[in-house]
Length: 553
Image (cartoon, rainbow, N blue to C red; front, side, top):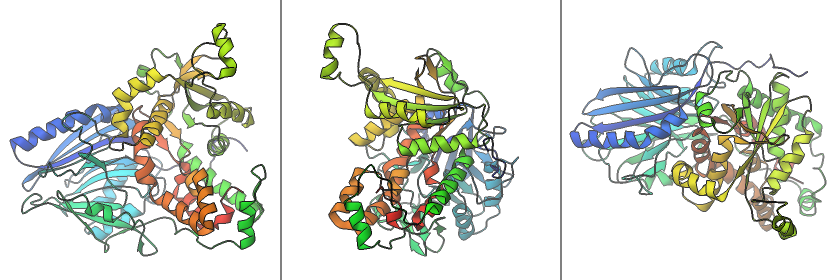
């Protein structure tokens, strides 16, 4: 039965934010540096959260703590941040509590989380509360009882958080959702991503006296072992500003088990090596496994699409004043036409009411025309760059497979080389920063233009801009289901053990390789990225499957 599901209510009211915090020594020089930092990041934070802005100072020992929050209103009443209670605790929360905490339908998850954290009297209690949250988050929290500043990201790093650990500003610690590659912070080493290795805390009492402050990392544990132990040594390389130590007594627990490393039989290995790409997978565990997976994934999508904001997005309207009408849709999907995006669209169709349209956003970058159309160009029958790249053609074909009763707005975003150069200079190079590789630039560029959501309707050519504040993104599917060509190469070179090691590595490094960058590029257009394939329940299900039940056969 189609329509809005009734059996899986989405709890709580929530907002997305751009967050900033700086703790610094008292002094005119330090205050001047903080003002420079605020000016450098204010515009980027404002685009992440255009609906409300808040600022709060706390005096702690010989230091000041500055907290700034910019809010994108998603659902319910707007809750300005930072949120400060009567006892002096303060919270900057850029996240969503899909489950794990007792948040009622009419409650705001930021308010509930601060109330719960404020009752904690030990480090262990705070770690227990944070590790119980299912959903994406980045937070900055000051606990007045323990006199400690807490900060971190969820285990997948689905929300961005940067810090300054470069050896220059040894009298301040700054945290921000997004930075800017401008003077005096253009140096590649000034900002770095807060590693999603655990929850961090630092004492605010006499923080900068007697040498570098000690930042404690309370790591993610899985079955009693450090989950990302391969990456923990990276924290030691961030000296001399802060001595980062690992506090395993008070740690966080992942909501999913370790990867199933049971090896298939030799027969199964031979099957994969000789498979025909046009054939489907063997019936290893029957259709029950497939139906269970689709059920778990559908519930993950329901949590992300039910009760979407039904309000206008002024920031999008203002940006799209010269780009035609807005679509009126509440949900958008980054749509390559591949299996991951098509499955998300098909399942979202089962969750939303019939009358709601869904925007499918496809990006193509202009290519030189192929030789076979050169004569048509010379005759004037065909002008301009060619956008018929594989993902574009696939999206045009795949949309025909979706429910015809739904209004699908396939938005074709055509990007010229000149637009890329201009946007790189003015926008997405700052958002990709502190990452810097060619791949980061390429993916960041595609995500930034996709999230902008301005293009022509596939069926009519009309210029439109998506009005959706929430975008479903398919990252996590290929990493867990061996969807990249390098996975096949790993298998050919080393069999199942080699492939298992690569998949395990992919999911553990996804926070540093992908998601902080992706969040910054998408949120720059006042939209929130949602990643159903990285829902804790989806990951838990896939982690338990044997490898030959997951790989493309």
